[in-house]
Length: 148
Image (cartoon, rainbow, N blue to C red; front, side, top):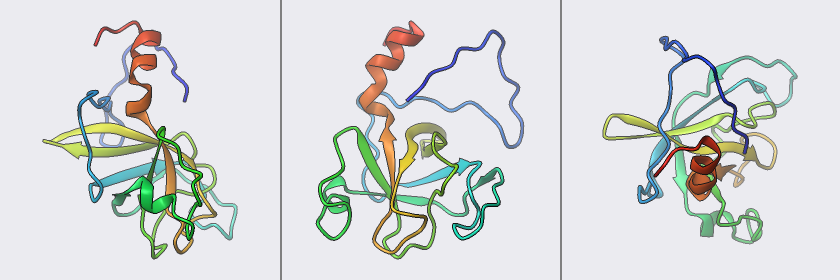
């Protein structure tokens, strides 16, 4: 995870806008629909990259399921979350790392995860793995010098 400071505010457009951090007590349950965007490959078998909001939502899955022996065999920690589809229909891909996983709650978008790693792109039984932003809220607020 990385933080960058800005001297001026950003302009919001139809495709670029700020996103809220989740509250410490805010919970996005498994089954929640979230969205990913990034500059990664649009086809894992080719090297073309383009900025895009990856089509369709990603479903938050349980860490227990994704850590099972038929998936990532215990590789997930409490600082990670798993999102996507077991049938491999859509996923983040190479080049998307660091991109946002955002989830809506009451009409407000929240940065729930950051694209981290996975097994290929959209592979059967290998959904994407994301850094869990909520696990780093104290650090983020400390670095940004924002009180909770």
